[in-house]
Length: 378
Image (cartoon, rainbow, N blue to C red; front, side, top):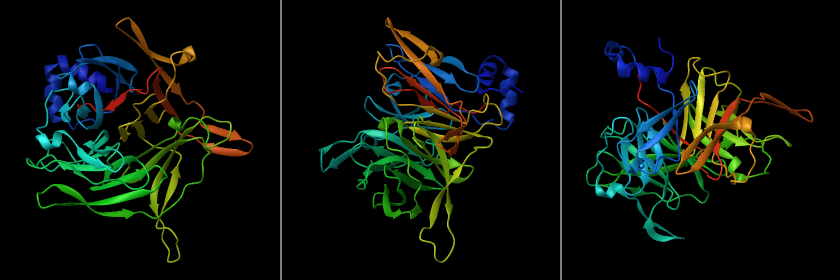
């Protein structure tokens, strides 16, 4: 058995009998790959990093537009691209593209602060395969809250739903329903209905009553503090990167949402910390959050891989042992760094925290530490 996804891709490319056998065998779940930037000047090439075995492989795109700004992805190599216009959904590996009408190519909205204009997309999530005529797209925007559209409606565009008083930091389709996580930690569940034109709209909003997590320490760069929601073995889960202990760098904690039972309970739900991801690994980025079954294929005990949007000036000195990869492009070197959290247990003045080991990818002089994509199963 060829263990790694990269090995299966390479072998299938040259072995006809392997391709025939692979079509009959159950698909092996693909692990996310990290799409590195910058790309070449033509915009048609990029490099992929495979955390499964540490390899760097080239990828040639079928279209220039898709490599500029990926705001979401789905299993099988599907990605959503927002820049340059128009909004597109296509497959990085096959070049196939989902047909969208003109109304779906741009989100138009009116903001009480910015007036009328085009909504800037921060993240897109899919309710199902984008090739399905029933796939609902939910977009988190910079200035217009959440917007919805359905791929199979030829004459409808995006329905803009506005935003709550607090900023939204992540969105997720889970068990067929849409959720949003706010900056202050509140969780909202949306009921989705349809209007007279058949376009999806938010029919109801439910603020979940959840017992809050203990406070972290509010120090340092706010970009070090990130929040993600995702599915973990069928449970609703959240990952937070905070400074949990004084005099220590921020690190991740993972929580599952559980119900609280009892007639006198003040809260209906609470966040229960988990200190092990079992046979899963967690992949996190600005437009990506997904837990994947790894079956022991990942190196060491690393369980969280994240693309870190930190800002390091070009003159910032980074230890040479953190250099991960250097790209030379137009006489300019772009160096990626990898921060490996090797400390599992942290003690400070009697405090104790169990840490899930993580690895972060970042780049000097840029907020782009790479984007996660999911290749096709083989």
